[in-house]
Length: 257
Image 1 (cartoon, helix red, strand yellow):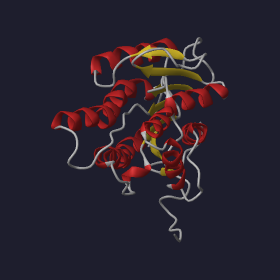
Image 2 (tube, rainbow, N blue to C red; image 1 turned 180 degrees about the vertical axis):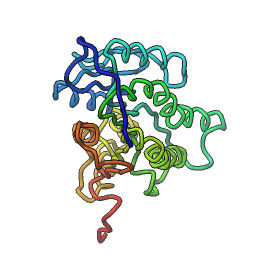
Image 3 (cartoon, rainbow, N blue to C red; image 1 turned 30 degrees about the vertical axis):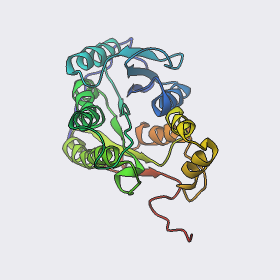
């Protein structure tokens, strides 16, 4: 299928132009840092500017607000003539079983983790269509396909993200827009440190997080950023509808106890 794109303006950067939602902390912050290290032009979309790596454009918007995303992402796209990459990373966790959390909690987590990715994608698509090599990378989780205790709600949202990724890839591949996702294991973020600190035995709790992965260690945010880079880079034409499991072997390996 022949795809035509408007030519970039003279002021458009020659390198890749990317938007990362949730880029002010944790995994998103690492993703922004990795893309900046490659000379990319990067914007973070988050609730605030604190924590956004130096060199990135800090866009303030809530992924629950379509008009705010349209304005923030659209303004960035207009400033640069196109967007090459959208990384749908913004999300929140929830600890609990199927009996925990109110209906409002369930709707809120879905609204951020799943519908938020839809909203950001809708805001970015007009500008992704101006790119000669566009890519979307959604952030899933090992919980999408591995039953972990106390993760019923969060797992449900990430299962939805992973399924949505495949459908998005099928819808957009003929437009030259590649859609993939990264599925990390337990990532060593401030959130996990906070969970460990709440426990009566923080060291033991952290050890349990490490032990989830057959490698015996949590995944570093930097590793996740590099996986996103692999999928988002120019020329990765055959990476479509794929899932990178970055989980220390959690999904594939069955280790003896």
